[in-house]
Length: 572
Image (cartoon, rainbow, N blue to C red; front, side):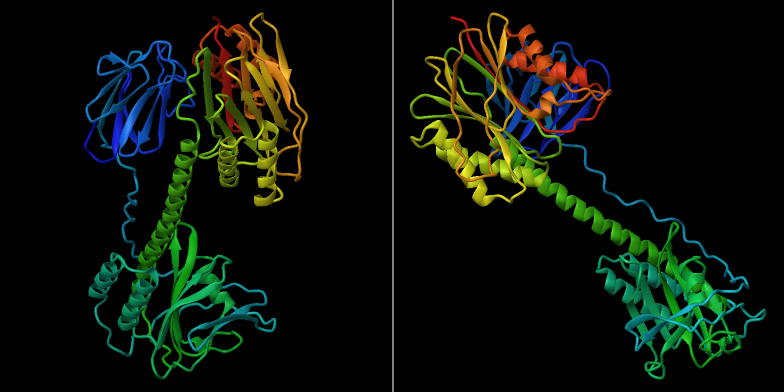
């Protein structure tokens, strides 16, 4: 066995076509010709469910799933299972699979930000604006909207000749280098935005500066602000027509001599604003003004602010995308853990009973599902066989499936009768599950010595008993689903499996599989498939059923979990 720690990978080398690599990172990795497998091999010598690799602590173990042509490990056909180590060679059909170091990594790199662009100022065009609004910033951190009394206004037009600034300002290229350096640092977004606004405030030298972002409802929220001592107490009153020019049209804005504008309320001083734009989406804006100096800003200031806004918008968007990706990764990791736990609850191997051949399969519709099956040996030599289907899909169904698994296992270890076991599980689910959660359950007790099968159904699909003589019957049983009503007393039915008989227990995800024309597979097609191949081993019969379902469905997408258990009594 290997002394190396995880992770490893399976390097697949098909006889034709490119090789590929599959990481060994889950509890189970299935291999076969069926498209439902984790590794699907287009090889006529491979069974549909040929083999699987399961994790056992710090090692991986290779199992043959009852394949027709066998699974070979380092040139030797395996009987049941064998532990894997680095460098091992597995041969399935004509395909070679090697246990190797993992070399492929998940792609997670960001795209390179676009080249910095230094735009010219876009002056707003003159037009009449309908009754407007103004937004008011009170003492830098209170933001509200109020109507302006129905007046109209003409958007500002920059003066043909901009006055020269009255204060000396530092060169902006060194300042911009500091901005880029700040944006590249790994620190909280709020801190980054505050530093950027501080650098811009120092370079442009306004009296007030604000960085505003839209929240999830589209409302502007102040993220950072600066003000000189003289302007701290002053209110910002900006006509909505100016705000629209920046936030709706995505254009930078430079206005000098505000007192010359025909707006209500009247404005004084000068202002500049630049949108925070990514693609066609305006995330917010950088806003600066001077209430006292009508010629505080020039074209260079607008170019600088616009460039800072463009680069800052990329940082904001990347941070948001990173947060979304991290949240998605967290959910994916949680789902993977849940999937591994759920797969661990499914039987690793079918029970080995003299005179009997048993096989099962379960494929969730999503990462995790609500289907359940189990084989539980009892102390008296009998075998509990359970197949369940939780209403709904996803995490809630998977959690309830886990509860059913635990409850049945506990009850089966007692000396209770089958009826008492099913009733106890039902009462447990009624007490511990939400009102809208329930499951259908087919629970049977097999006596391997006599072939007698006693069973109960809680609203489940009828099991299918195919006789050796070519006839079949449905094992229907009345009953409401488990988890709905307390005190449910199941009716116990009894039948006997003769040599050559096959019992199929399944969930409705199998018989209700739909093809591209909307037709369902149905129990009759399932019965005919089992009748045709009833003399095969249980594992090969399982493959034929899976193949029949795949051929019937075609390219139609799966819509539900699918589970099948086959119990075949061998001929003497």
